Amino acid sequence: MCQGSEFNKLKNTCKGEPEIDDRLLSKEELLARLRGYKKDLESELNAVNKNLESTAIAAKGGD
Image 1 (spheres, rainbow, N blue to C red):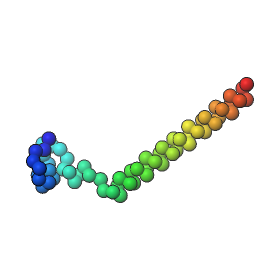
Image 2 (image 1 turned 90 degrees about the vertical axis):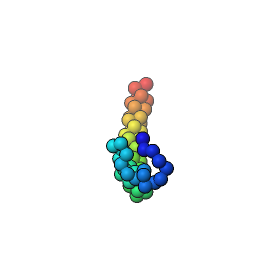
Image 3 (image 1 turned 180 degrees about the horizontal axis):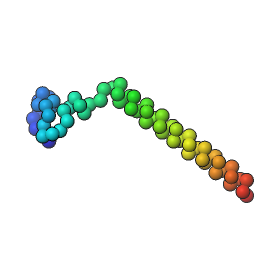
Image 4 (image 1 turned 30 degrees about the vertical axis):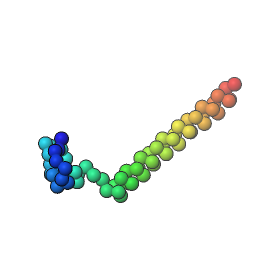
């Protein structure tokens, strides 16, 4: 773990840890990732809903 309270000390590599600049994402990068996650989740939700609808239709027809 890095020791010291000065930002410049934290910016330097300390015991193999990545530099702070390498760990931080820009606002645009974070938003792009979140949009990608949202798109993936929406696709999964649509697939689940289709399966539920198919199951419900089959159950009604099977009664």
